[in-house]
Image (cartoon, rainbow, N blue to C red):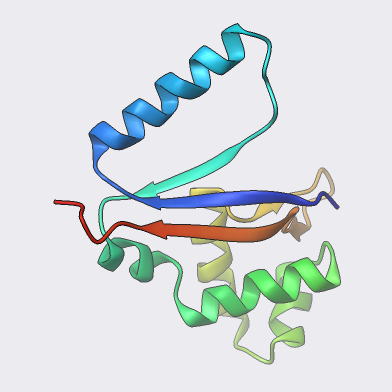
Length: 120
């Protein structure tokens, strides 16, 4: 497992575009350190995706290592179908990855969220 960080931004499209441009410029100079960013338009959009139950899944997967969705549902003592739906959504946005063998995993250690009170 890695020890990286995923950064979550609650920001405008313009701010996200500026971040991408800055990363592109760094890459042009040879600074190609892997980064993982997720952007949400507002706090409501973030909390709609990263709910407390999904956050629990992320923590459980990081602690346990790669698991099947069924094993994860048993670990967190939740219904398989609801865990499957949550895992699918977290895979879709990039917070959970699939291994080559089809297990699900979290390969990062920290989720850093930045919320500007000055954003429009």
